Figure 1: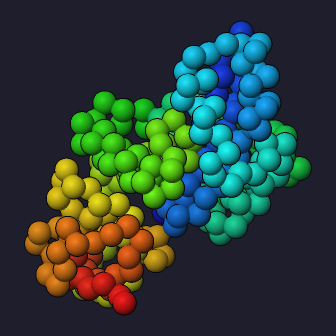
Figure 2: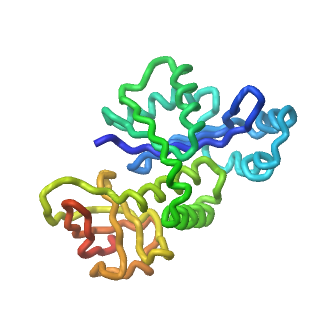
Length: 245
């Protein structure tokens, strides 16, 4: 199974094509790579190519997260991909132009990554109502927890990952068995009355709701560690959970 990476970019459209301003890569294991141009560089670009959206939504959010300098992003992307330890990486994105940046970065990198990259356009998620509600929840929580919101590339990568998880729950083809899983709460999705958690190895997405014994989903908070008993097979069902103190 390929390792999942969510990709999002912010860019300025110019007559010669998109000029990328920031980019975020988010792994299924919460590993992050984020790079951006400096505020001064983007302001200079806006002088040449005025754009209200970039001025109002993207520019004010630059500098809110630690970032790899843009000139070093190509080499850092290769190192980051190699650090995932995966032979195959499925890179998902919801705008066709996003993967153009990856192609540009890899062309500029000193060497190719060891992993095989499988670009996957999931723009169909943009019209999925369940996915959209999940994305709104992700943006709300990220703004509260980290001060970044929609149209920050990293916030949008997290929202994409949750949208993807909601629409495509993790399914494993295996004999049904009951296991103990250690996981971390990633999002509280109040609209659907459940908590989204992920196992430490990144292999399982765990949903905790009204039917989960041992814990009330309304009492859980992002970042809490859990010990779960789950039945896995054609689907994953959390039978019980407890918060680790």
